[in-house]
Image (cartoon, rainbow, N blue to C red; front, side, top):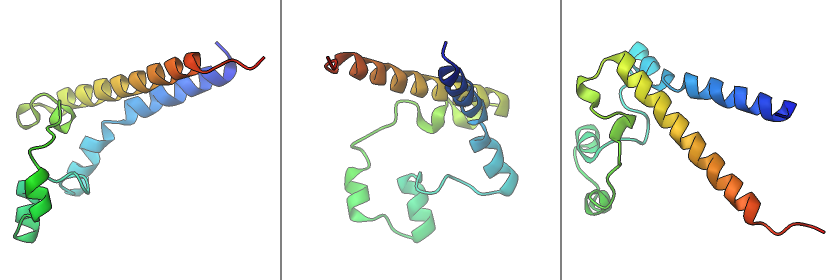
Length: 110
């Protein structure tokens, strides 16, 4: 493994392991949901109404693993952290695989 690839892999692993900070920091500072990741119900609680476009489009997409965990309400912090790390690992792996495939499909310079 080249030195730059090793450094990149270590950096990505560090960021993957750091991903559960998204659970602990909001709890620590009583911050609630991540900005912009609100449900229709949360928007209604915050503003008193649901924007028409949001109400219309809300059912269009449903996240395969909402809140990056299988059952966010009944899981311990440790289990949620494991789900966050697995989610980050899957995301990094998919991006790496897609990048590798695109690289291999690109024409070679002669």
